Structure formats: structure tokens, C-alpha cells
Amino acid sequence: MRKSILLPALLLLSMLFMAFGRKEDDDDTIDGDRLKLSELKTEIDALINTSVCDDTYNCEFIAYGSKACGGPQGYLVYSTSIDVESLKTMVENYNQAEADFNTKWNISSNCSTPNPPSEIICENNKCVAVF
Image 1 (cartoon, rainbow, N blue to C red):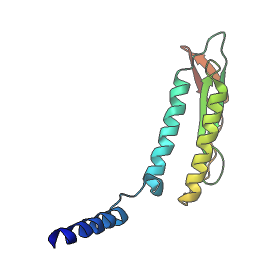
Image 2: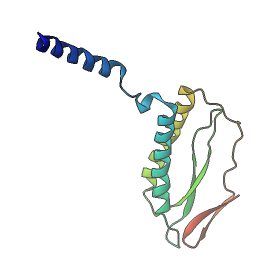
Image 3: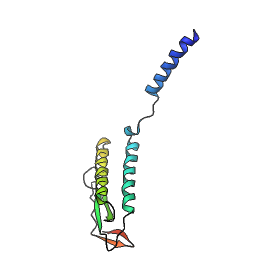
């Protein structure tokens, strides 16, 4: 008799654990979404950090991020020594992800707009923004 009760009880207990005992998915938390944005930005920074400038490669900049009021968070400088199309795609994806994050979590911002670099120079084989 005991064995016949034990199996249904274990089955019920495991179903309750699956229904109520699961951890909240990272997709459902603001911290999880922030982490995903941070990981995307880290990938962008890693690509940019491989860029070098010299007489062969030019320095350029690209706006990144999406403030809640509109406009970019800032500007990234890079040289054309990297796969520029991949960088542009990564930045577009990041910008859209941040815009979605702002909408999803009702984020507000100070609505200031950063100025783009007035000039970009090559210093020690790295592109440097001048404001």
C-alpha cells in the first residue's frame, strides 16, 4: 500500500516543484537584460580594440546606444583596419536592443545629446577622439 502512494506523491511533488520552484528566467528581469546589453557592448569594444591606424587605415566614428529620449549614448572611434560592416551591424543590434530595453522597462534619461568628435587623430596606432 505504501508503494502505491509513494509514486503518485513523488510525481505530484516534482510537478509542483517544476511549476513553482523554477528560477525566474533572465529574460524576465531588468538585471538579465542589462547583462545582455553589457555583453553586446563588450563584443563591440573587443572588435574596436583590435583596430589600428596608420598611413593605410583611416579613423572613423559611429554613434552607439539609444537614450530613452532619443539620440545616442555616445560615439565610438575605430579604424578601417577592422571589418567595418560587422561593426556597423553589431552597433545597430546594440542600439535596437537598448531601445527595446528602454521601452520594456520604462527607462528615462536626461535627454542630453552628446557631441560627436570634432576630429579623430591617430596616436600610437590607435584612433583617439578629439572633442
